[in-house]
Image 1 (tube, rainbow, N blue to C red):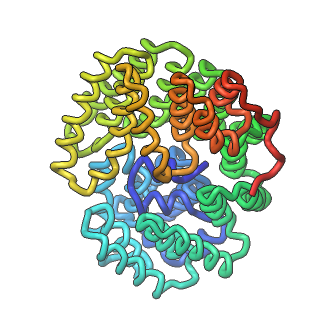
Image 2: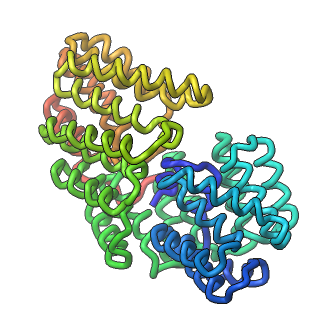
Length: 474
């Protein structure tokens, strides 16, 4: 699993910790002298939670940390870890838990106090400078603790410095060459550079070191699903689910694979299965969006719109403060406009887009730093609306600008960046500009020559493509 998934749901540095964790056994041995609790049973449950967290079994981790607090209500590290894992599900409670850890900070060990400082800086919005200083203080005090290097790498990634973040993981591996999920993170950095062969090598190393965990198989499956190696994708993702049946990312990546194969109903079913495992409507949105776009691709527009509208109603009724769900309802509204536009419902799409823009204005007024985060979706929706209104040349011009920008992430559950490029090519083909359509398809087919939406258009314009992807890529 790309921990950008946990990451993209929310929580920057805390999610970086979840996403780039390491071998549980070695870490817990270190922790035995550094966790402050009055209860041996609370400590046992904390260990269980930490082990599950490091395996990315988040639901199990939450349950164990909660039980630990039941045995010791002043257990600072259990508060902190539970808050980190709950942020996407219940941001208000997560912040309260981190604040509770701050309140008992003086009773903790130095190791714990420094970790509290790091998490509090982010969770309680104390500022980026304070967060960075807290991380550096922790790394300086405990240079051989993997968590410090993970925290630093997460911060560097957030600052847009992937090369430095990668170097931090390489430093971590000099401390412990068998720190399994460091290879996972290095694999995703390689994907971000388009180095799929190198990513595969990292993921295979990860699987070798942690063959009894679901996530190594999931990461390989995600890579294969996005590069057209569908048989290997299904093998690895099925293995991940055999190890951990509720490991929802693997259902999501099976959805990615089925969409790539042209099985849009099957893709929607996998995405909906993933969503059904997640308790929080906030965290469910990515899969709801992927399911809705898959249904639309298969011609089920009304069902796709109903999914997004039901999600909007659920999240608004379950939360009391707009601040807790941020840009998510706006994103859902944008996707409604996109689906309407793709289905030729220009008048409805125009009204939905206008509503999304109002929601964006409200969000940016309260959080000016979110302006850039919301620009891409608006641009895509505007371009598709032009196409739905008959202005295909205008839509092409706008989509060219969209695809010229580097994607926020290389892979996603729904292959949106690739599908946008195919839509651009379709618009060119509709205007008889087949050579430009072929050029627009080339980046898609270079990554995945078996991507069904691209193959359909390639056949239409007479563009030859390889029958199968190469076994490895670089």
